[in-house]
Amino acid sequence: MSGHSKWATIKRKKGKNDAQRGRIFTKLIKEISIAARNGGGNPEANPRLRRAIDTAKANSMPMENVERAIKRGTGELEGVSYEEITYEGYAPGGVALLIEAVTDNRNRTVSELRNLLSKNGGNLAEAGAVAWVFEAKGSISVEKSAGTEEDVFNVALEAGAEDMETEGETYEITTPLNELDAVRRALEDAGIAVASAEPARVPTTTVKVEGKQAEQVMRLLEALDDHDDVQKVWDNSDIDEKVLAELAA
Image (cartoon, rainbow, N blue to C red; front, side, top):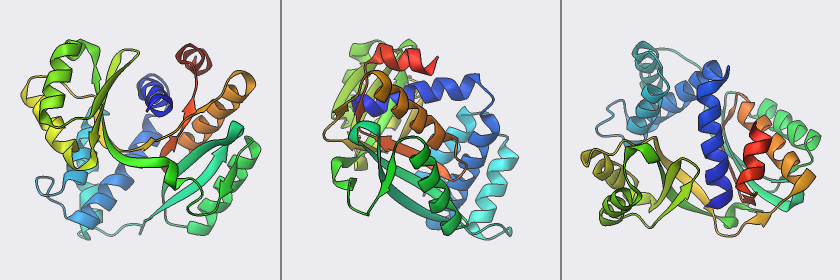
């Protein structure tokens, strides 16, 4: 998952360091509300809701915000009705994109995303055009400071993980989707702090992009990530880590 995991690592650091907290909170509120609507308001019986709450805590979201979002999802409080939509498209260089969005206005969102992609050298595609490039997996990130590579790998592997890669200052662990929560719990039970744990769309093939195209891809990914209706963006770009770091800076 080379392309996506590198970009995801940069996004996590960026979210902690710049003026993005308000936007992050908005997206987390949507995710918590939908998770509660679909699976109930008890995080012990709703893994998606539990992951969303954990992410909210990691981003220092006030618990009263979390509780209101849960109540909106379960119908205890009135609120906006959201729907989840996945869009498919291409970035410069033929890079495949899966864009997961949550919106209260489907027509507005598709129009804005089509315009955003067009301005940044990409385009929307028909359903099914690129979804086949991605596999549903679990993705867990652990900061290197949380444990040695051998310890983290051994705990994760024994709990059901498939692979682990080193990306900058983190270990990126890939799991079968149905083993995501079991691996996360095993790491935490072993005293290894988990930076993030989420369902992921992992590319089965990647597209190498360099130079100006790499810059265009990064600019498009950042623009999509900044859109209020976009929850997650998955891509199959393969950009050199040094180039990614330079462009992110």
